[in-house]
Image (cartoon, rainbow, N blue to C red; front, side, top):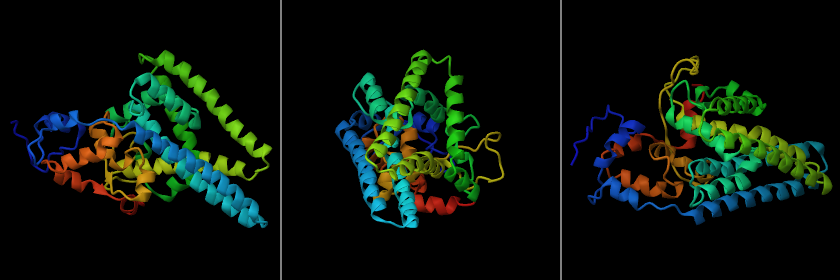
Length: 337
């Protein structure tokens, strides 16, 4: 058996360190990590039931919103329920599109072609983005996490009033959109770049048509008040919830709010979050166990619970426990930092 350095000053949860020692990990029953990993099989039925639930909740948000908003005659109450419904819609879209990330790792279907087709049809169309384009940018997040080159960098920003202002005015969403498109273009030498560009153009058009069709339905059915619900939910609250979730996952509580982490490396940190109803929705598709995902990106989120239980019986359990928190605790700790 390989001897492992168990010094707690050694970060065994760093991706490179973990991959160098994982073959020497054993649980309480003496089963090796490599043997255990072979038993993990994605549960695609669970994936698609979860995605279907997201779409169902999306329809419920619109139908319930239409009834509540039309019921009230006072403009103030109508505007209040438009805001409430937009917040709920943005939250549900965040839940659904967490599975787009899972598709980026080929984990929503048994073969890659089906994975990408289904991802574009049922997920990418919501944000007018192709899965190939997303994958090119997202994989750099795994490679360059914590560095100035990270392509998913909401955690570079401190959780200050400015963060909320930029997110709740759409400024942050525009910045992220422009940055990701710039990064996708910069990867023009990527082996899939030609097909990725073609697919990106198709999905951009498909997404625009989809959103115009939805807004047209609101007009034809005279549910006019759902138009601002849809626009605000997608344009403001969905980007806000997504950016906040990523910040809670990766922002170091010791980070300096005055430091520009596009120039100075922030450093790697990833958390695991306690499971409850809210967390399972906000951190759907395995985001509650985001640390484990970074350790093993190709393992389906449907297996992350098993992975966590196994690792809790190994020498890395103390470090794993140290990185576990709740979304609320992380929010309190990071606010203003």
